[in-house]
Structures are given as C-alpha cells and as structure tokens.
Length: 245
Ligand code: ZN
Image (cartoon, rainbow, N blue to C red; front, side, top):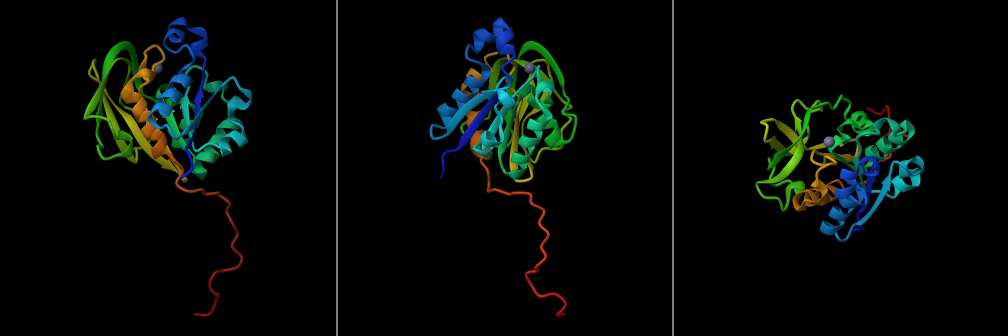
C-alpha cells in the first residue's frame, strides 16, 4: 500500500498574536498535530501548510497529492476563500479524507459538507473533559482505553447542530455537567469525514498522548477508499440492446 499522504492545515493566527498560545505551541498548532500523527503513523508522509500561504497552501496540485486533510481554524474562518473551500469539497467528494478539529466546527468547509449550522454551546473555564469510547471496535478508537481525560479544556455542549453522525466514536463529559458528541464520522460522496472535538488553543491538548493516537487513527481511517470522479456521463450507447423485449 502506498504511504498515506496527510496534509495538516493550520489557521496559524492565535500562535502569532497570543503569547500564551505561542508558549504551548512554539512552532504552531499545526506542527504539534503533524508530529502527533507522525509519531503514531511512521509510514505516513505528513506535511503542513497554513492560511498565510498563497491559496492557503491548498492549490489544486497540493490537494491532488493529499489523501487526508486535517483542519484547525477559529478566528479566521471568514478569510478562507470560497474558491478554496469549493476545491476542498470537490476533493472530499472524490475520496479525500477530512479531519475537522475543535473550533473547525464553524469552518466554511465543515458547514458546507454537512449542510447545517454546526452550532454548539461553549464555555472556556479550563475544566476537566472525559472522553468516553462509545464504539470500542472502531478503528479510530484503537489503543484507547474505555475513556481518557484531559485535565483542562474548553467545554462544548449539546445540542451540536450537525446531521446525525454515521458512526459515533466518542462522547465527552465535562466537569460542569455538559455532554457532547466529540468524535463523529460521516461520509460525503466518496470521502470520509471525522470531527474530533478537543483542541482549544490555550491548553496543551495536541501534546496529549491519547489525542495524538486518535488523530493518527483517524488519518488512517479516512484514507481514500478508491477514487470517484463525478463526471455525470451521458451514456449514449446502452450496455444491452434496447427495444428487443
Ligand atoms: Zn476553542
């Protein structure tokens, strides 16, 4: 099997402006995410790019050479060009995997692919999050115990305004009492989509061993399952002869 080509996309805005975020992620959140995938998937080719690159680093050539794209964005969702969003959507429909992280729930690409508002309730209070595995046989949950905890995270609570996931891998409980569907799978066209909740920029979530394992498992799970090109062919020559019955 060919090496899995993973492209980690980072908005890379908080890291430039906020000293607290810079202290946790001196080389950017995208670098920590990429390192976490590499460490658990040594055979994969993992590269990074950011919003600040021409065409946000998501040219047609780059996307054509990408099997799985991961997406972390927050402050600059509106700065992502519609043309690039359309290009990413097309690649997902063709078969590219997409992993949307944390505040990426409000990214243009996630809302477009899911077709709903993707809203949720939230609170930044540095509370404990416990992620329960609700599908132990799922490839994304491999190597994870019955649950794992993050000592400090932002709270995301239900209702999460997304279409009912095709598969539910994790559910989170927060110290303040809320719960949230924190690991969700969908398919759109030929592509696999995974949403993974943790990852607020002021907490060291992407240095967590279990989070990194989930990211790598998700990248492997989202590997393209064959290539489909939506050509809408006018099949003028029928396979069988018409009008003989
Ligand atoms: Zn956040």
